[in-house]
Length: 264
Image 1 (spheres, rainbow, N blue to C red):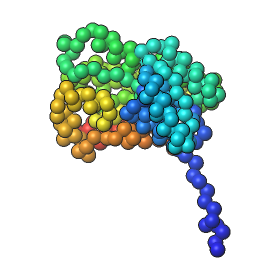
Image 2: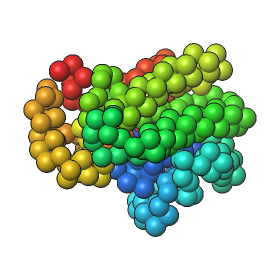
Image 3: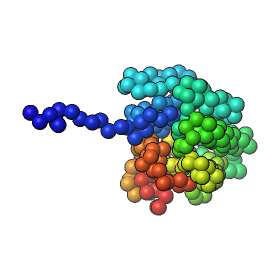
Image 4: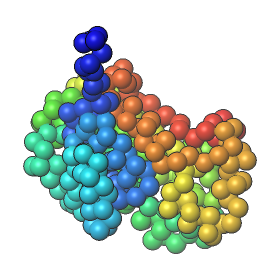
């Protein structure tokens, strides 16, 4: 018998032996990312506002053989954001990477009909919350792992004018600028910062949009060269690659993961 074929060397996972923090990890893209990162060998810290859903996803990961913990965190509370990063280091001893996915959306409509409170909420959670997370993550990576990678979750809706979601689009465009600025600032330290920009993705957020604007998903799919929406796991795959050493010379990129919608 050929003894060489009796033993197989298992290829290490894409994120083997890394500690990764995921915000907005209780559902959708964030939950898919947490599952994928753990399957690829990472120790994952899940954060979101909903403790019961966080616990459920965490238990799924553990049942599949992964390493996961969770901590409740509202991105609208900058103290809680910093505490989540500190909790990650407390539990795992280090931070190597982060996926800043958490965000909120509001009902679609023209900007003149949007209450000022809605704009404040979008700014506080989608931009300021990510700003605070990014700052705390850089400090934690610098103090523990030394080098690492961060991926922010932007949107194809942030590249052009957005009549239906003007505040959401504006904050995502600001996030693109923040991503590029952070890449320039922290690149010399070996900390890479990129973003993914999903197109139409089958999440609770898009389902809610479909409820108030029936037919919007079909309309977007008709404009998308691949003629379909993404599964959350497809966005997670792109984030995993950007966080991994396979993207070791990639920083400052906002990567469209949109089936070609940004070209249409």
